[in-house]
Each structure stands twice: as structure tokens, then as C-alpha cells.
Length: 173
Length: 239
Image (cartoon, rainbow over all chains, first blue to last red; front, side, top):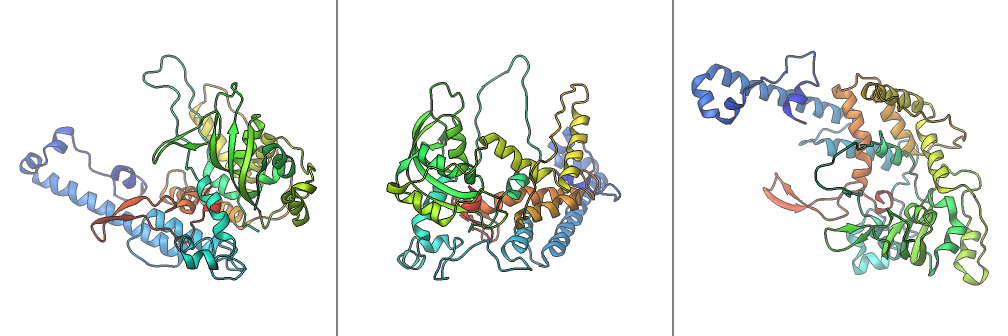
């Protein structure tokens, strides 16, 4: 998100980004010389937006995961929250990373699997994990038409596609 | 584990269970020439994935299922089938005995457990996820959004009411439900609304994080390093 968009997340606070014209943005040195006061306001306002938003994210991280760590990124926040909910459920034993029969290695220990110890101690996990690793291809990106398009075209979006897919998952047996 | 067999035999045994399982397969395949958009990905090199009419690849059970619906000729070279632990619908789980009989080619049973066409199955799964309890609210939210954006087009399609019930709810479902329920408490576009939206969207990505050993700049050490995996990473869920 742009800083302008981040500032607009807090409409009740004076965190709107100060708008400059293109010339001022391109020539910051000249802008500083010609209007030092506005230059300072512009820079301080940007810093205020960043500071406030950082504190919000830190607070959210603590509220959602009961952890206080830095730096916090949205990815690490999501990871902490979902780990708490899925990997260590409060009400029952985690089935997220089921261990092999001997209880020594789980799907999570990928780095250990392709070692002599990993292969020997992972039961049959090392035999089948490659089928899942090989099946992971990421999202499909394909462009069927290149260049300028004359005429009508349709742009389809799937609202909530990722959460829907995640909701359909379950622990492996 | 699954040995060599034909796609048709495997398909007849597992059918819709493939949607409700973690299945990884290595296959050879050939689609009819009439198929415009084949769905099986094949890697060409380190960075290119194509979707050809013919080839050899690894795929998930759902991808296999869709390919079979497209009349693809498939030879299974090997694989593994792991059913879901919870949230099992009636008549959709393959028992150990049934699975073992499939492994033994001499006594292979070709019983069809569920006869739903693939798209009907997927549609029902999505319905069940989206249109129960919170789903109604989500659906309404999305409808409003669509109306705003396409008021002049009159092309809004609503989803039918659910016709199947969920026996149990998985932790995954409950987490998504919680996130969606929290999200709609806040104004659209607000910090909290976007935060819950991101948390819900990030789940699948976090499950795949680090699988490809991608290199990323690390500001702590001022150098690049392999992206580490997190607590959520698992090739089963990522696929």
C-alpha cells in the first residue's frame, strides 16, 4: 500500500499525506530551498503516518497472537495468528503436522528428510512427501492475448478464493 | 501408497474423495485435441510452467479429478492418498479395506462410492463453505459490492441455498469463519477490516512459504538468504 493509502486507513486522525506537485517531488533539493517549512511538514507527516501504522500493526500482532516481537510484518502477523489457531489448538492435540509412527519426524521437518537420519527415522514419510512437493506448482498465470485488445473483454474475480480454499481443508488422517 | 495403474481405475475407486483428501500423483497424460485449456501443469525449466495436451507431471487429486472430467487419458505411475481426518461426509471416505483392495490389483474393486459430477461436488463444497451462517453475511457483503460496481449491467448471479449439511467443522473452517465474522464488524476499507481480510488471504500462502527455497533480501544481515519456512508450511496443504 502507498503511504497515502495507509494514512487514509485512519480517517478520524490527522494522518492524511501532504500532497505535493510533480515538480516538487522530482526536485526535492529545490523544494527544500524554496519552501523549507512545507518540506519539513511533508517529511514529518510521512513519519507520523509510518509511526502510527507501525504501532497499530505491533498492537494487532500482540492482540492476535499474544506475542510481542519486532520487526512485525503482515506475513509474520498472519503466520503467528494462524499457527496459534491451527498448529496448536487450545482444545485438542494438534493434528496439523502429524508425526510419523515413531513420533520423531513430521511433515514440518522437510530439511531433515533428505538426510540419512531423516530417511531412516521418518517411516514412510520420505517415500510419499515428494509426490506433494512435486504437485505444488503455485498459481496459474497465463496470458491468452497479447497487446492491445479491441472490443469487449471480461475480467472475472473470485471474491474470497483463498479463504474459501482454506476453509475446505482438514487435517490429514 | 499407490502403485502403477490406469487413471480410469483409480478414478472409479476414489471419485469425489479426491476433493476431500491429500492426494499426490505422478502421471502420464494425454488430453483430447478438442480441449482448449488443459489443466495439468508441466515444468519446462526452472521458471516455466506450461499446460500442454500431453506430458508427464506431478499433480494433486483435485487436478486429476478435473482432468478426468475433461476426458484425459491418464496413466498413474505412483502416488499417495491421505483422506481427511475430520469433517467427513457420509459415504465419501474410503475405508482401509477398500484402499487395500485397490492396492492389490488382483482383487481391485471398482465400486463407485459417490456419483456426483466433479463440478457439482466442487459447487457443493463452496456452497457449504460460503453459505452457512457467516456465509450468508459474506454473500450479502459481496452482493452489495458487486451491485455497486456493476449497477448498469444487471449481471448479478446469486448462489442457491445450501442443500447439504456439514457434520463437523474443521479447524480450518472455524478459523476462516472467525476471521470473516470479525472482518464484517468493521467498515469496509478500514484498518481492521483490511487486517482480517489479509489474515484470511495469507493462510494458503503461509502454508507454501519456503517450499521453493526462494532467495530474499534480509535487512537484518544486509544480505540475501533462502526464505525460511514457518510453522504453517506443509506441502500437503500448499498443493
